[in-house]
Image (cartoon, rainbow, N blue to C red):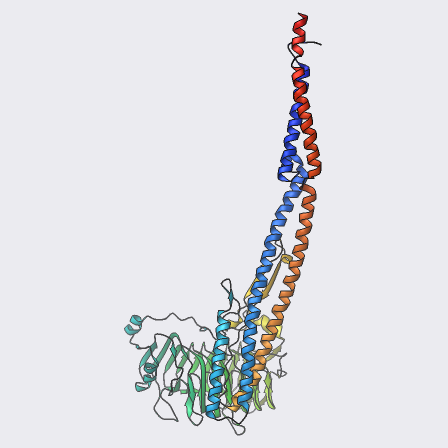
Length: 606
């Protein structure tokens, strides 16, 4: 039909022109983007699948970055451990040298000087090793007080009647007024200072009976070398109502004859020792040495700890006691306190106390190794009731115990005659060396009894008792530094790797005597073993991360390939389509001109 109202031929050509133009534009878009799916309308199903793949690919890229950062973190930790191991190896060589009996005091002092410098560098590395603001090893186990201290300002201290102490000379001058009230206003370094124990040397000089408030500050590098003198420590004698609290002693080296402790050599008469700690070395040439207090009568110890290597060097004869926290104690209590240093002596040697009589011990523990000949215990060497009743509750011991006679995981010898002993909720690690019996030997008489018993548990069981709060743990090095790396692309447990980088040690060795050097060899071997174990642990994690990195690469490549199959344009195919649609467009444009002439034919008929 010929019509002037409707030009069907033109409409047909216009439609073809529109389709070819649309297809041509689509081909141009695909060639310029490289994708055959640019919009959901291009292929709804494959568009959804491709978008999901793109999200996963981006996640794998981030996971790969996470793993690489984790490897960098581990590299930082292991490199620092390598440095620590190097220093420890040199320290062991120095200990081996000092253990030989061919060196005089001056030579041993020179050896100790190098050892002290290297120990300081090890401590610095331990404290400062970090990655991206994260401390990797944690704080030194001796860092901080068990009970948090809020320091008084100088104005507040003066208002409360304190005499302010800021220098070593002012600290030493407390002996001039032993009944005064003193407070520290800053840390004090006693390096090179010829310290005289406050109020006490060979039972002369009176007693310190006043108050000393450390105010949360630390006294560092206290050195005393008086192997023929009694009552050696920061305080020689602190008695009859003396109050000593809130002070830390770091890197002490105290040597005396008897009644030797880092904080106090000898104390009695209801003195109070609260929230104090000590690290370093204490040794006695004859008897009675403790990490914090040597000899203690009637004076309670609360919230205190000692991470001190304690040694008595007398080969034979009766000694009053060698202990990680206290050497000898009578009519007193120990509460919320612990000892972490190794203890070596002859008789009555204990991780917490050497000889204790008439004492109450609660929420306390010892973790150091204990070595002696007779009456050797992980917590107490010799527990007697000659003068009073003893009780032990919520306490434990975890160190190796080595001895010949009367050896126990918790108590070496329990002597019960005039009083009773009560033991409740107290444990020892039955999996460590020497911990086969809770009480090595018990002797009862005069109708007296031991109520309860030390309980042997596995290491994991003991850790569970600590973690659930049944047993105490105050040491800051018990805090794990857990790092969790997100190495997968979802929230499942298989998409993360967690590991612990914490490694804490407070190594103090005394190379100023041959006996101290020989003890240091054992200590250094133990610490080197710990460093090697941590290196192995971190190395295993490194291997896992490298494996995860390979797995991420495989997943990433496969996803990219699959997405390419779904979404990428075949340029050869698209270019052919482009040419075809371009020809069709040109043909349609040409024919449209012809189609537009059809109505004029109808006019000719008229």
